[in-house]
Image (cartoon, rainbow over all chains, first blue to last red; front, side, top):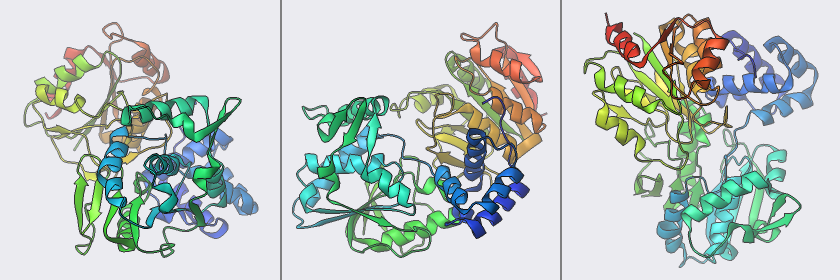
Length: 276
Length: 185
């Protein structure tokens, strides 16, 4: 990258308008400054020198508009990101699930999806997976397929293993949940059997179910604009059971939500909250 | 109103503490620090800077409102944007220049949000992060300052910025402090 592109506000408006008519999802829900950077990055990687070229391509190629939208999404970065959070989830939350006959969990707006796989590993490690119903939702079919056929290359796996060992320095090993084929690590299909993959628009649709024991929603709302973040958090809150747990990213907070949304911090540092 | 944005990596810590310990308590502008750091070490860094700083300093949460005279340190493993709404936005996007937080991202968001009101300072470091962001600030009419490469513990970062942009000032760490002290005048 030798030059930073600079999408102006006017160009951003044109792109938003075009996407609204040609794409499958509206970009109006996203945080403008991050969205601008995502678009600039897409243009650099795909050789679009101007916003006009991008708009022109989208106008004449519906498939391209969705390809563009998929590429704007932000992945969850790495397995067992923030090792301490996973440790506390195991110690403080999973322990309370042991007496439940069914554990309903929702991982909304998946992208990648390292969060989903980390969760499945932790459930299996604690012998809780078999009684879990894990909903993984995403607007894009490709996102669902990617998660259902998750594989990590060696470098990504190394990061996951390192995080996992920081969280659980016992005898268990993250590699036990993968099949190694050449240089790739294929995530265990057995663990994925407990997952219900659903195409779902988090911005406009009702939750895929209600009465969740846990919603894992770390760092997804960073990409949404303030109003969308608020409405998503409030909708997710409604779908939780009383006493259910809500997990957001370390860098996030629950400020600005409606007064009817009442959480108690289960872990202040790791942003694990319990619905009152 | 001005917005002071500082980026640094290897060798920048003593310069940053020099700046933070020598500003007036009434420094009237917000300051943003994007310093390369270990992703899984979440505690210790801001506390170490706080010991030296005369100004309040914290790692912002997402959408935190920007306050004058406050120092914001980009949290580990997050990119830090500054927005026109006078808030800080965090992101888990891909690493840029092998870095998250990336200086290019913080600098270019400052250029986009605050344009000519930015004072952008790049310190010692071992990769090219910050060079393009500094160019964005310069193109937007902001002030660009680079620590003198001769003084840097590692000069790769400042040399890359000087190559990418005709920066306004090349200053030693002490001169950067003096510049900031006079800024409110």
